[in-house]
Structure formats: C-alpha cells, structure tokens
Image (cartoon, helix red, strand yellow):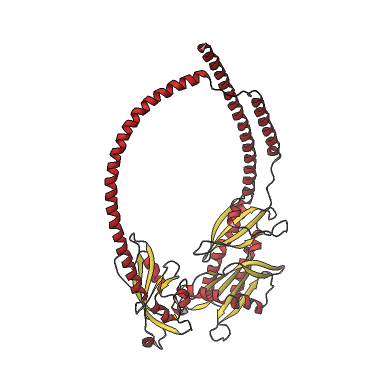
Length: 509
C-alpha cells in the first residue's frame, strides 16, 4: 500500500514539474517577443537621431569654428591697430568691412582711443562700423564705453582679450538681438596703449547658418569660473512661439544633441544643437511594434491556457526529506559541540585584544588633545599678531581669512574681507605685481616672495605696504593657501609714484 502511494505521488510530481517547465518556456517566449518589439522601436528611433545629427554636423561645426575665429580675429585686429593706431582710418574701415563680409555674425567693429585729459570718460569712440547701421555715435559711446567701463578697464589691466559677463542686448535693424562684446587692447612696440578694439557677436546670425533653422535649435552657455555653473547666453526661438522654461544642459543631454566646448576670449562657452521639434517615427516601426506585441500576448495566453495545474509535494518527497532531516540533525549536534569549544577560545582572544585596543585608544585621545592645543595656539597667534596677516586662495585670488591687524589697516571687518578678490582691495595700478609671482610658485618655482604695493582703504585712502607672501603646500606638495604678511609703510612712501620691484626668495618645498 505504501509503495503504491509513493508511486502515485511520484507520477503526480513529474506531471507538476512538466507543467511548470512548460509555463516557464511559454513566459520566456512572450518576454522575448516583447523585447524584440522594443528593440525594433529603439533601432528606428536611433536611426532617426543619427540621420538628424548627420545632417546638422557640418553646419554645427561651422558655428563652433565661427566662435573660435572671432577670438583670433579680435587679437589679429588688435595687433594691427597697435602697430598703426588711428593714423590710418581707411585701413581700419577696410579690415572691418572684410571681416564683416566674411563673418555675417559680426554685427559691430569699433576702435576706442584713450583720452586721459577728458573729465567725464578717459576714452572716446574713434571709429565705428556696423552691419545694419542702427547706432549713432552717441548711442555707440554709451553701449561700448559708459555701460561697460569696468570691462574696458579690466581688459587694459590684464592686457588680454576680455568679454562681458552674460549676454548683451545689441540694437539691430529688426529690433534688439542678443550677442556678446569682445574687448582687445592694442599696445605698440613700446608697451604704450594705443586703443581698444571692440567686436560685437550676434547670436541669431550664428543660428541662421544651420542647415535648417526650423528643424534645429542652437543653445549657448557660459561656464562660470569657480563654481562651474553654466549661465544661458542664447537659445534659438521656439518654433511654436509659446514661452517655456529656460533650457539647461541637463535637460539638453536627454535629447539628441551635438555638443562642443569653445574658448572665447577669457571665458569657456559650450554650444549645443538639438531638434527644434520631436523627430518623426518611421512607419515601419509604428507597424512592427503593435504586431510584435500582439504575437507575444497570443503566445503567452496559449501557454497559460495549457498550464492550469499546480505543483504538489508528493509522499516520496516528504519521506526522503524526513530521512534527510534526521541525518542532518545528528551531524548538526556534533558540529554544535565543536563550535561551542571554538567560541570559547575566540572569547579569550577577543578579551585580550579589547584590552590592547583600549590602551591604543587612550594614547590616541591624548594625541588628539595635544593637536587641539597646537591648533588653538596657531589661531591665537594669527588673530592677535601685531602685523597684518591674511590667507588667500592661490587659484582665484579670493581672501579666505584675515587677522584684526589686517582688517584695521584696510578699514574692513573680518566678515567683509572674507570672499573679496585681492583686486578689489588693491590699487588698480599695482594689480599686476603679485600674480606673476604666484603663478611662478604654482608652476613649481619659488614659494616665497616680497614686494611693495598699494592697497585701497575702505574710505578710498591709499595704504602703502611691504608684503611678504608664502605659498603653503600640503605634505604631498600640492598648493593649499597663500599666506600674506603686510606692514604699513605709508609714512615712508608718501609721495612716491611706483612700488619697488618685487623679488622672490628661494626656499625648499
């Protein structure tokens, strides 16, 4: 009787296993059909994206090349005007006409000359050439000199090509367009400033160079120095004409796109090209997708209809499981006895190790207290030093911390100085003194230097200082902070026009 029951239970077990296997195979076939449908749809979508990007690749590269050529053009025109100055007005007009004819995105080219005798502005607009002639002389003077006087001064101080922060609104024949201004100072062979070349880039003219502006949308961003955030400069008008959220680089990454990083003057831009409207799906994908999904569903329903029985446990499985369990219990008892002995040995070793760890922890706590006392002593000596001391970021020039003597010398509080750029507290004529020495130290040169320079008190008063700078490094040799000690020598240097020559001090790293 027992043998019959075991045989009958075994046959039911084989039947249940066969049903489960058939069900699994049918489900796998249905999943494969669905995956095939998704693969066909994805392949069609990628094909459309590659076709769109292939059509726009050449035009997009032309836009990127135009931005890079604008930087080279400004520098080239600055060198020419630095050699000739304003003595040949016809030469400037010919060059500007040639550049504008070749590059349609150049809306404006101007030449600004210095006039120190003027009381209102030390600069005047000498020559101007615009593409659509919407500006008169007074409006151009206000746009290029009065509005962006700080950028003009910065370009002259840095002796390099400089741009304006963010986009600039440019008057055009059809209204107002968005663009950017490039300022290139021109110096002669003796280092004397002859003037400043100004070039205006018009972004919508760049977008018109695309293969089909109605199908592609151009976006320009400027990477902010320091925090790496990207500021929108320009976005092609939406074809629907409805307003929407300003696009970001994160949102553009989710679309089919062409992307390129461009260095324009002293800034880093990124150019993006994306479809202006959703790409159409081909009829082949729209036909194959529902047919493949329908075939997969029919196959899955057929398999499920033929597998309605449930798996059962048989008497043979229970009997074998019981005998197997009894054998495991006997083996487990012996293993538990051996494990108990091993745990007792481990406990003795753990207690000895715990005593050693407690001793090391006590020693480490004593060392931490000593380090804390040393750190307090350093802060106390820094904050209460009689000489002005400050810490700066060697990369950005921002003030990180200053003691009370440094704050009293310049008339600021510690909170006001923190975060200020060294250029904001330095006399404009002395800004060029320390950056070359810092750059030399960062490239592996001398880490210490001394110099004399003028600071600006908060009330505008000039403070002459003898400074000593030291580039602090990590134990691994990486630049960490720039420590500056400043001694007020205003009484000794009153009436003198220029600081003494800075010099570096050789010290081992």
